Image (cartoon, rainbow, N blue to C red):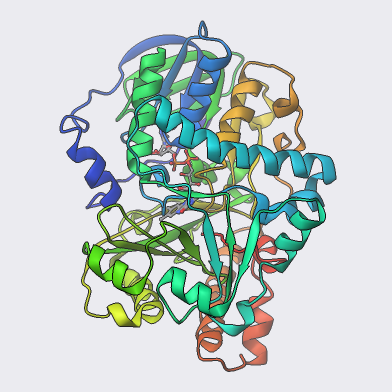
Length: 478
Ligand SMILES: Cc1cc2nc3c(=O)[nH]c(=O)nc-3n(C[C@H](O)[C@H](O)[C@H](O)COP(=O)(O)OP(=O)(O)OC[C@H]3O[C@@H](n4cnc5c(N)ncnc54)[C@H](O)[C@@H]3O)c2cc1C
């Protein structure tokens, strides 16, 4: 038996969810599931992972009876609150090849790039107006040592005959991003921006049309690990041949996942609409922009001319518990606003109208993995996006759908489907040590921004950051 942790609610929904729910006035007025039920496959979690899994199961076999239960509303988790960068894994090609070998690394990177295109096509096919803009990603340096942090990704792809990255001069970077604080960069052509909650709510509509039985405001409280497994909620029980856990950071309280995933928060701020100011500063190309700080900055414009700006790694969880700090950022979000003001000093008079936060499922290696709870072949999970799940959740849905249907294909057989590759230390060492390391990382960031060397102690402590963050920083990780 596994008890699942409760899902709390933010005091205010993120900007994206506010916009999406304005189009669905009755979305919150749903009844939870009650009674005894049977399904072929029960998915727990209505974010992109759960919904892509449902979608891809139905694509593969429309006769399969799928139920999906969600504690909040579909898209209420990270999927409705993120930065809306739809990325591929080309920037992570080096670490994919290191982990899985040349052939599988290339296959996964190509699959993730196909996923970016498929999400755009999905929006077109189903009439989802989610502002999907495939204008690519600019990986930019906001301090001198970040210049060239993209070199390995550029070289590895070029060595394989792929023309995916274009180096930008400092002037071009500053011009295209509207900020002279950018000292250089590279444009990755595969990548898009999206309004994340509109995508999530559109996916919900599509899977319901496919025949998936979706129950919102229905938190699973317990998974009974038998064969077949049973999912219990406050008022219902679902017996299913397969259970797919797609609860992202909330999964981290489970004993098997706790040391493999560290929930971290990522905070976002959004300005008031200012389309004329964006035109003035020249950021008109719809590209998403991210830097290479360990607690990354990521920013993009919105359809109505705001800037939505985020910062990763703002706090982390004890024993995998997603507390209210992951729902309401409080004063902590000031730091994210300061970063925005540093990068866009000429927009200092533009007000911030929205702030929000959300949990990230940071794995030790910074990469996604799939597996079975307790080696029970009927309980399947996928977790560890580490802040880059918008595009890769399409791949996640393929792995989970094939595994749930026992297809034994390249998705089920992939080495990405064999559990975590590395573990964090036990709590409380991880928690208290993590706080010390994060303080050092913030000090290093301040030193880099001020163009001065960090102390030996700061450098030493930063060396204890998770392995996936220390080595070959991919240009964009939330
Ligand atoms: C602020 C922020 C910015 C981000 N920016 C980006 C970005 O720009 N690009 C990018 O690629 N990634 C980004 N990410 C990460 C990205 O949002 C996630 O990787 C992705 O949404 C993961 O989808 P998911 O379905 O796995 O998780 P989620 O969307 O979190 O879905 C999990 C769902 O499970 C539900 N749940 C939990 N417990 C239970 C239970 N017991 N019973 C029923 N339901 C339960 C939750 O309510 C939630 O809806 C960001 C994340 C955050 C928080």
